[in-house]
Image: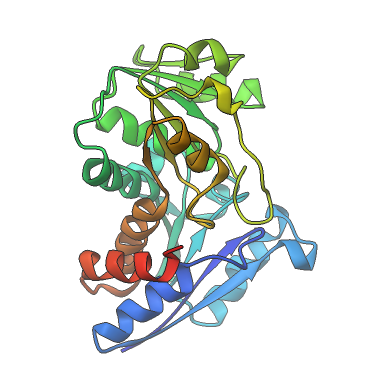
Length: 277
């Protein structure tokens, strides 16, 4: 079988998604072409989504992955949302079926599975989440499914953090206007902003606030070792890079696009080999 899929986002030239999907299809005896639609070099924005979605449908795409800055902006242009996508309030996978655009969220499952594999015994009493955008909302949802008892959310856009806290208004999620006081007491830190990814270098918090009893997870995976994770390890923190989330969310998107069952262990091994060093 042959499949045509792709990714819409900004500054995605370094994305590992084409290799992840194409190589797994090849291993299963099928052909899949994964196209990157990078908004940045073309001077486009999320406002171009209606035209891009229509073009992909006309060209016969099975579906599209969606990333920053389009995970929430794409929702008004879809016909239907899965239950998880509706709960998260963000979409990272759009499947085209019978003239309909169906939005899914596999990010939350990707983080959930990666955390359970990489930090299964880490403390889950209180966590600081940096970033309340499309990625942050998926992480918030995953964190609650993981049983994290208290989640503090910080975003440069305070209104967005407060909206996320209201969205998951069961008393466990709170918006904070300053992340540093919370960082002093929480057991874990999850970074869910574009800071540190290729093209947007930097670190979201002062490294001197890191401490050995803090675990740190980053959803950025290109580069696999971000400045945040490097500093965290130097401070003695347990860390979780974005590779596991990238692979597990891709595996679920692959299922949705193709109807085939991927081998996640093979995908993880190939990903780690590619990004080693």
